[in-house]
Amino acid sequence: MRRGFTLIELMIVVVILGTLATMIMPRILDRPEQARRVKAKTDIRSIQQALSLFKSDTGRFPTTSEGLAALVTNPGNVRNYNASAYLERVPTDPWGNPYIYLCPGLNGKDYDLESFGKDGEDGGTGDDADVESWNIES
Image (cartoon, one colour):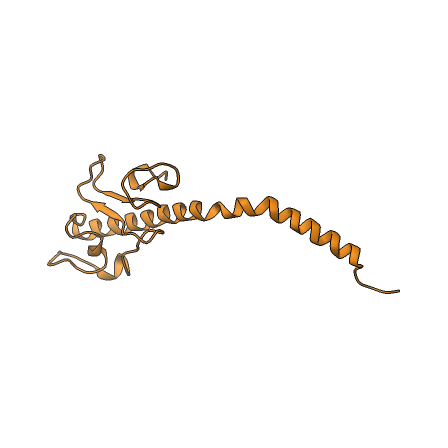
């Protein structure tokens, strides 16, 4: 008895795989932007943790002028600064832009931290919407 697949069986498998690919590919191709938005939210949460540690050590958040760079290098004579406890480097958002940091914040928080999203500009909707620390669900 011969083992293996016949040409017809292989053709049926190819047709099934092709059909599945045409149904699934549009969904997969739409996911990169969603993944970038999730990455931005994750980055913001990580930066928030580093900011909390900075405040716990120094008694304050970095000023707007010190920026997020204060989480990597001591911006001056900051008391109780612990360089190894915060960030190794300041990340850029998934679209290659810097995260925006303001302290004190303008949205009822100690600070504002945001990414301007895909378009790199303040505001926007859909894929261009900003990812904002004060609007991220915990």
